[in-house]
Image 1 (cartoon, rainbow, N blue to C red):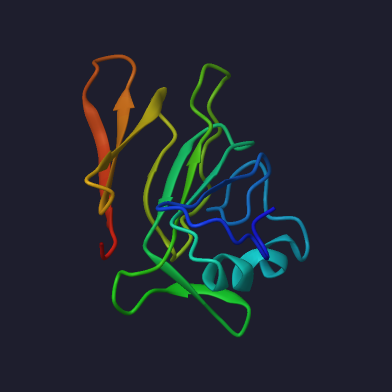
Image 2 (cartoon, rainbow, N blue to C red; image 1 turned 45 degrees about the vertical axis):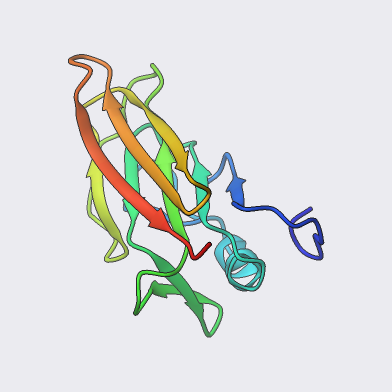
Length: 144
């Protein structure tokens, strides 16, 4: 359980099957699902949120929670939400792009590789299965 969790950990990664944030595609956010967790992520120092259900790839900008809604972080020191539903089922097309999503793909299968460097940096790369190339990458930094 994240809320009230007292163990001192370096990184907090949360995962969902259903989307908590998404561009317009096959599955939207269920009513209230985003607002139920937005403030909890911020209050508990969540760094990364992984989700699936939509068979495509999406990555948000660094986010904060204001008025119980996701907003772009002013200083890139927030949490990032990534959809990695690219494991083999037919991919879902996008009908639009959320203003909070900075990268999205509906034309390639792949996986997300995450490395922690010196407990101060999380490096993530979305690797395209077809050519083993990096299709997207991002870094999350935190003070030691």
